[in-house]
Amino acid sequence: MVVQSHFSGSFFYGLSGVVYALMGYVWWQGDKYPGGPLVMLRRFIMFAPL
Image (cartoon, rainbow, N blue to C red; front, top):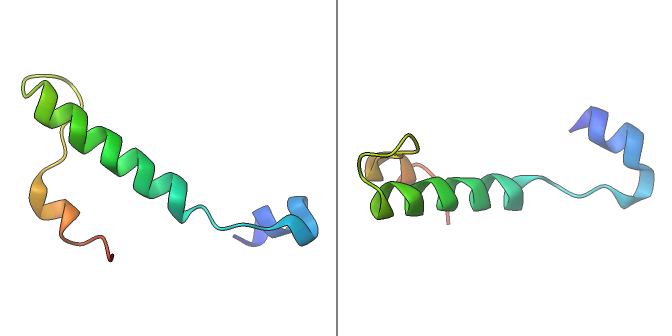
């Protein structure tokens, strides 16, 4: 976050939305294609705060 703040200055935003979007995409792909390379177990989703 320090590096991002340095380069973006006053336009600093957190990356939590990007991280949650990637987690959701991987979880969705795992449900859609169970044998595919992208799989995230449901127990890992429970660790993500709402």
